[in-house]
Length: 457
Ligand SMILES: [Zn+2]
Picture 1 (tube, rainbow, N blue to C red):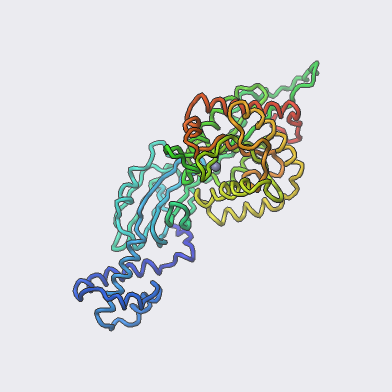
Picture 2: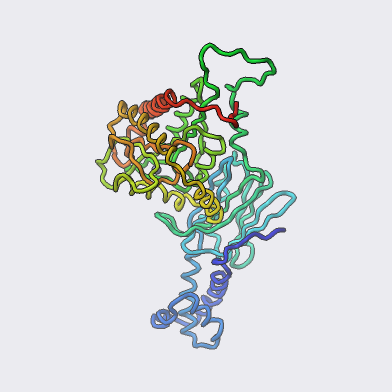
């Protein structure tokens, strides 16, 4: 049995308090009503806990106060909502609580299992329904059981389909979410997007020993690889429409359509940064594009603004310095916050950030991103009004590949009820995808992929 890392911030205090609170509640019932003055006196959980530990002979009224205070803290540590996001990349289990919760994670072999002990937790309705949320096609979780293990400890046992590399961490409250305990199950050997691409690619010419005759005209030396990045996903719904549409669903539908269209082109192929409803950290999206040696990177989004009449399509490229407009700066900030909502293990994120900071010379790439952006914007103008007539620039984290021309397309405003309706319309989704494809093709006609010493074919 191996014990996993538990964040320093989550050391036993809360669990101990909750254990004491249970004892205290017994006294509370026996000794009488609450005393507001005493509650105010114990200003923090910590003080209250210390007081309880060192002055056990205090009068009953203090015990009553403590019991109520600690009881409230316990109630907050309860799991109020649970979600499971299965995907080939990794499966995420999210337990949402009103306060930080103490936990321990163990791996058990024969058969492979993970055991997650939640200390100070009760078997809440949200936890009880967790086992019903395991999808049959989950790549990693076979079954899941939740039960009371011992007083004050709820145990979650995850029966695995194969050995996994787990990561467990807490996320701070953000937006609609409270505290989240996140358990990510990664495969022991991460799938290699490059290997998957080569395997899936039926267009690649078969290797041959025969000398290849010289063609009459210069032919494209290799396929152009376009990475399509459907914004948001999983825990991060992105912007929400008034009719209930979620940006993450619309971006995935349009991106899948665009992939189909690109794959049908003889000299292009597409790779999605996500093909399902799960969150991919912003830097991982950039990393995937670089891993498959992408020629172009297109991130697909659906804009939102406070004013419901804001409308139109826009295209963005990276700015190394200042954003070209206040709205572009605001939007980049909003899109960059996806990692907070979607949830990123901070240890891993820091490593990626350090890597990105090494690559600071992006001027040539940005120049090409602007050309690509202009070509796509021109095509989008045929299917929707344009929010801005030029490609805008701001510091979008997802556009920071130092060597891959990258754009972010805000297809339309999901916050505009009329555009929200259109974004859900299959014909319009197809028109948008075709417009983006048209722009990519226009760009590639002028700037065909260069043969590269590490070219795939
Ligand atoms: Zn977005």
